[in-house]
Image 1 (cartoon, rainbow, N blue to C red):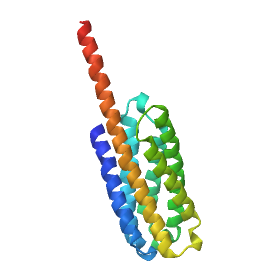
Image 2 (cartoon, rainbow, N blue to C red; image 1 turned 135 degrees about the vertical axis):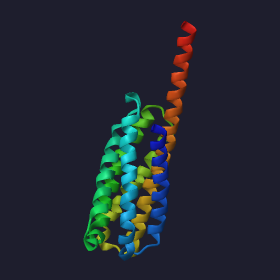
Image 3 (cartoon, one colour; image 1 turned 120 degrees about the vertical axis):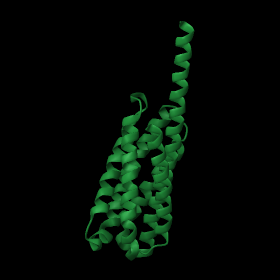
Amino acid sequence: MFKSIKWLLFISGILIVIIGIATLFTTLDNLATLAVIIGILMLISGISEIISFCNREKAYRSDWMLASGILTTHFAVWVSYESRMEALIAILPFVLAAWAILSGIMRIIGSISIKSEGMNLWGWILGFSMLSVVLGLLLLFSSILPALIISCLIGLTLVSYGLNNIIIFFRLKRIGIHIKDQSNRLHEVDMEGH
């Protein structure tokens, strides 16, 4: 099951990047058509982060992943079930900004934790997380920006988040390999002892 969750994180990351690129070329008025798709992909991403956290051994669990998954799931549910499209279009940049900032901060903390564990890829996670915070801050003050720039910022934020998911997939894959190697070594030592 852990393998399928990892792949779900990877696939959602790719799809979020694709939607982010599509958003780069979408005016803010047409963003409502993408909002439902964004909500569904974010829901998949958030749930896969939560399940990945729950399925990992305690030594390899990161609270930042759980917090990011919960935040992303809440954001996705709100976007998916907002029935008033005018309200959604009006406040989506601000809600997305708050989500990008908070999610980015959680992933920055996670990247520092990963570095202290001696894991690779922490620099990439840190870089995309910092980019997410910066884009979130720009979106927060987007009321003074033209609609085209807001759409571009939303698209770049989604691309950054999706790429971060893809990098986390590779980190989880390496952790899985590490756990399997450790398990095999323990099994070999146990067999030699008997």
